[in-house]
Length: 294
Length: 190
Image (cartoon, rainbow over all chains, first blue to last red; front, side, top):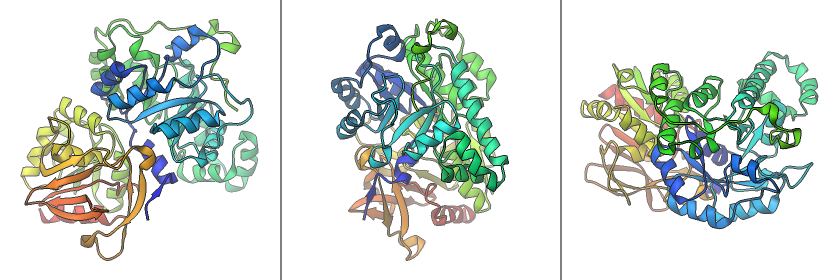
């Protein structure tokens, strides 16, 4: 008897993405550029995060026409975003056959208390996290993949670095605790004990952990790999750069060869202008996407 | 025994862990010189388009072909099977093109159709093999020299052609070491 939608099948899908780059795209043409550059998946969107910032208002799931167009254009997996807590957007994406759903803080949350119960779905989910407590809560709800939140659409790496360092530091801390100290730590982190026990034993999250939010250059991608990420999402960084094809290729190669600094230097030559960045000090608190999620 | 695991993208660490558990000296390979002295090669699961492209751009295809023609065993799982195949349905080019088989990518459907199932793999003994299929390919047709090791609902999902071994599924994810042990057995004979 074949079993679909098991933890092994859903988490295994994320395992296959490791060491790779997942790129935001808004149409078939961009999706093809991403696939040709060696992306391991694409995220089908109506607007990339930097344009969502500019547009303001309520950001929702993309028009299914856009997602279908991208699904038809490429043979690599296609991901799409639903709003935090929006069960029906998630069900629609699942019904459409999307390969992975990102319950994402880039869109305006639909629920200010509860995330989607992802364990009830056959399709796997990825969720953002700023720290270990958040990551473990999402895993308990059924997320099969975690990514840093970073600060999407800013081209500024500082938040993604902060979130990945925080998670890695907290994982090392969990490992250093004695078994009887884990109970209080579960309370401190607001995270279920059984998953903390697993981390205590293995020294890593039970699911793949990618970097996202603010990656704009090949060196940024390599930095996130250096800090222990399993792979990277690049949102606005590619198609808001001057030469997307070249940028996409360079970011893929820098992610694979993240410790080959001579090569990353070569890859960074004459790339043209990267996306324009935003200094996070100029963002008002309500403009920060990373604080969405509970 | 040194086993090179192609580490440009995908689930290479899982293969390395299993191979080390079986006593092999498994190493990550991103550049051709890292294949020096390898007695066997594994091409892991991942995205075949990304793995094929990175292997081509970093000159890994020819050294692996050379090892194969010297009789060294090569094992491809899922994307690795696509990289090994001679013909890919709907595509004009191949990657390594070593195995006389035609593969059909993502032929079991999209991610929501991915599944686990127990397989009968006679060369591994009577105990069923736990297989996990993730957006998996299957083999549509095989040449004369290719031995079919397993099928699932009439589709070919594991094959061997002399020193070359390929599966649609992911033996690196399920904790059953028999397929890797079988592969290392081929290396000892070579």
